[in-house]
Image (cartoon, rainbow, N blue to C red):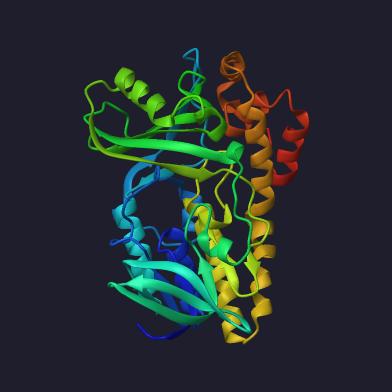
Length: 390
């Protein structure tokens, strides 16, 4: 490990590794510091992604794919099942392999990756931020860098140290719990989503198949709802009923920032990406591909800034993110806020009315249009922002 780099990335998740790869591809010297012993461990994620989003960023390796998803079912509190046309397909990943390979691709592009590096602060002098301090192999170390990237997850410490507000309000912090189960009877190409106050108040519960009788089963509920009952309790009750004979291979819990993007993505030479930047889809809580898209944009802007010796180039990242995804996420956030207030009978009513549609009209757009009929302004906003058609 050298003492000086162009860029230091804190965190080797999908966003951190992607940013490092693109910055290195543009000629920057890049160091990635990961606090855990192994990249990709532990897995705190449902692991589901859209094929189209992932293909924008990386060539897909079949080893990453646990299951290819062609269908998904929405199950209302009363048991009504809607299976809308996806208009494409998705994947359930093996994050252990996926994250590891993203870090490897970053290294092949020229970045350095080191694990068991616990970053504990930013360093500075009279000119501003100069790098990071960290603990590595029992030693206190520091490294200088022209640019520091915070890819360090929810409530980013890098962001806070730089004076960026990364706080997530309780209503926007999804409390999540997930178990990876074995010995489950599922269709390997179908994801299931359950709604209602008994299973996931102000959120939803998911069942994502991983093949070979395995599945990720998890729940995400608003922090407001979790004050009355913990997410893990909802999950345990569901599994006891739906998969009584399953074996539990892993159990994880954590928070997901289902909020709008942080107001400051770049401050001086500090850049935030991924969960640290709240680049998670506020409606679904999915953040793998959106974080990677933000990281790609950031990495390219960083590469230009270093190549041209002009840190003002970093401001191209927030502008490009806003155009690519940011505006959409604000609409998703408003949709989430509306849906969170739906009572159980509203979910049942939505399912019943969607089932009345002709099969070719049972699309994602058809579901949204039916769900938001009491919020017409959101429907038309979706049309404008997403270019959706009936």
